[in-house]
Image 1 (cartoon, rainbow, N blue to C red):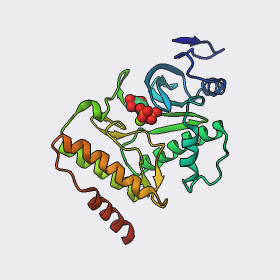
Image 2 (cartoon, rainbow, N blue to C red; image 1 turned 90 degrees about the horizontal axis):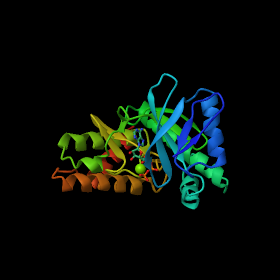
Image 3 (spheres, rainbow, N blue to C red; image 1 turned 90 degrees about the vertical axis):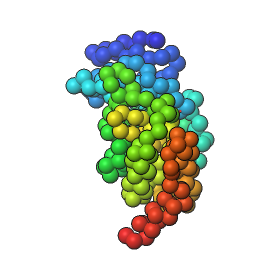
Length: 242
Ligand SMILES: Nc1ncnc2c1ncn2[C@@H]1O[C@H](COP(=O)(O)OP(=O)(O)OP(=O)(O)O)[C@@H](O)[C@H]1O
Ligand SMILES: [Mg+2]
């Protein structure tokens, strides 16, 4: 771990090479403006981001998701963003794309949270840094569903209910699986950056894949799952009744 000193601020400990200069500046500003108090330990090095445990100014734990600029799959993100009709003009610039990607996750998380879907409470997003409620106990993040290998029938029903709630507000997660669900008394859906509006053409394929992933996981655990076509049919019926 490298320890960085910021004048008049808390220290920031980071793992070597994670942050580029702009990200450091963003974090520096967030600390100076007292939007966050500290970035402490790394929770997870993901494919596109690193998630840290930090603190806000009331010493509450927060999860800080920092999208990497250098090693991101920028072309893939760009392709996804131009396919999202909420973001029509997307400059082919790495910083622009990663920041927009982060904003997209924040936007999707806010939509979901306001619709009472169990997702971490979104706090704010600045550049490539997304700050949200920390789901876990003390310094320990909640386990992912995949790590629990639980056979809960009610857990399955709750997740399907949340998928329906998302669809009701026109949102599809787009990357739902047992890897993107944290279990902390109840299931919390995370990693919403791939979220698409149902008005997008390909969104039903994503919805189908999301339900298939969940069904596959729970079937293996012996849960009697609902056919994905049936769930989608009901979602469409409900939408058309509006
Ligand atoms: N709000 C949170 N509270 C606690 N832990 C979290 C939170 N958000 C993310 N994490 C942890 O960080 C991990 C990575 O988060 P996320 O899936 O959002 O990022 P990612 O870059 O897409 O990672 P991956 O490549 O693993 O999918 C999660 O699996 C979880 O362990
Ligand atoms: Mg993930």
